[in-house]
Image (cartoon, rainbow, N blue to C red; front, side, top):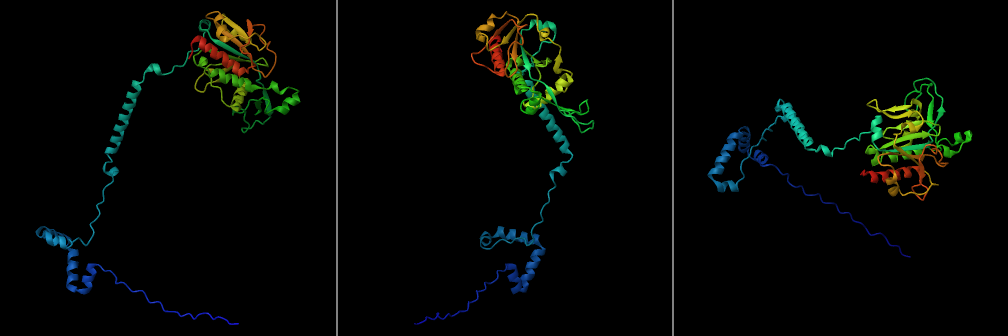
Length: 365
């Protein structure tokens, strides 16, 4: 058996890299090689103006030599010229220019406003307030009957400053906190009371108010809404009120209303919501046609029914704002009971359907 030996390795020394000659400037080469030329270059640095004048004269006298030989330049770089900032130079004129530009902008805005047609600006509808105006203005009056608006004491707090009511202020009774009774948050409370959860549905009233107050009929000043709760509390709703969009904020507003009996606007003395005396018919105009929406009554097409209502009279509609129950809440005061659909409608949809029909009948767009 033969073994192969590794080939002998010969190491060759690496040749050093060739050194390139260091580039030197013409001035340094002349200084190192020739002393007189170095003195001349130093004098050229000390007298740049003379050198420049000589270079310019040489370039003007002999153009061929200037093309072949490079023009002589200054050895020292020129001094940078420091410019004063505009704010410091024109410091006195800056306030005057800014004031003049502001005045010009104000004049331009005034000119733009003057060109706007006043007839295009939407006007707030005038709501009848006096008894004469209510008698002479036909309106739609909606009464939300059997509304589930009831407060419940959540906790009993102390009289300290940290105890706050639902509206953010400390309650008068020592910091007790109240909430609007509803089937979502108070199921155990309703079970202890032995009540059906369908009796605590304030969200139905919330949906009806959003549908009614957002309608063009209300924005035209032809709608009045009343709320008659299951506890017998009668609430008048101002047409200018903006009901909170979320149910949580609506609950806090209703709790504050039921405890303080009125809600005023932020910047004035106008009452947006207030508790008034029963019965609700005392607040109707004399020539009011009163009806109740009932699923068990004969179906009437509103397009053909509304022309049969006495002309110039207001229309009062009683709508049940509860989950289910009998519709005999206004049998003693209404003129007739009608149904507006072959299907069972929610209270919010029924209110919207009646408002749309009256908008078409009265020409409200």
